[in-house]
Length: 468
Image (cartoon, rainbow, N blue to C red):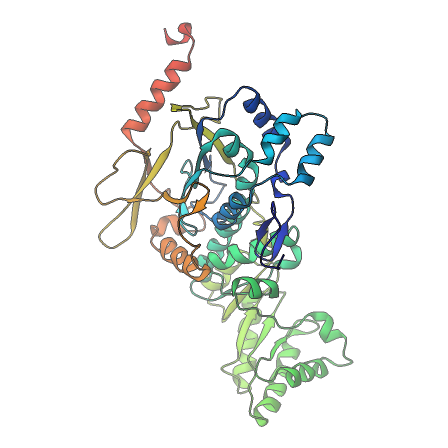
């Protein structure tokens, strides 16, 4: 077995492999499957994955994680070890476990392309297949789509706040585990971040890795300038000096001195980094020191607890900051770390179904999202409709087939292409929707057919007394 051929039942996400991945699920998925099997219920079902609501201060989401979800579906199988474990729980009939041994995902998937802005109630993915298969994959599909969509949506806001200045992913050390660190690097790059500190993400996804130095490096030397000179000797064409270990402005003058030494040897100081304090004021003072010292081309890089609000503050104040390193708050989406995302049955055995519980009503039936633009290419509104509707003239149907019979219909698009798609799609949103605060609401209407169909099904579910 080569490193590139995972063992049966292994889900590979980038360089990380999850053995016995069929067990990466909630137990109730398997108990429901067992009951379906016992009742001989395995007709085709459609499940729709969507966000019920947008988090506070979010006007849109950026969908991400589809590639991982599809790879999970391709890998689905219960290994002998997985079946032995399930047998040890003393819950399942041996015949059901024998059935699970043959389970593969044989269904179809329609999905919105990664990097596309989406809104509440709009399906990101619809999974159709025998209900046991489609039910068993719920937890994993949600997990794949949820975390990357959360992070990509946060990263898109940081990119918007930077107004064209590069955003660098700096959050690996504080993500929630190794898998989350890889997904964060992918999702932030997808949403427009330029570089990442994550070296494994560079190797895996082709994201250019970047980094400077830590405060520990500076304090390891007897004098601050000794640290600067040592780093310049090691990386004479990539020297970026961290200024705030002690006194930021004093360090800026030392950086100018090192820049002169580099210039004498035919190199130049690439830049400096600020990691604390009032970034607006410090960046102005440091810029003045660098310019006066003959380093007008040295860039100022800012980091340290940044999010879209602080980035926007710096940009609007005209701070001479050339790039932002954004870490924890972006990679864990600190202000909105989860979505009210659901994977709900909308059709079984040719019968459309829905949920009517307060606050959790679902729209029945397989659906389509039709997106309209004006003549200039600006997005003007969406229509949520039944899947077999035509949609408004000229509208784009967002949900497209990506898997049939358990097989991909096309190779996954390159990550760079997904990133370009995302940047173009976010840029096409109305300016009011792209605002970070007090954002406008993107128009999403519900087709007449969908609305009347929904009302008819809700009426059928009411008791005779309620109907009167």
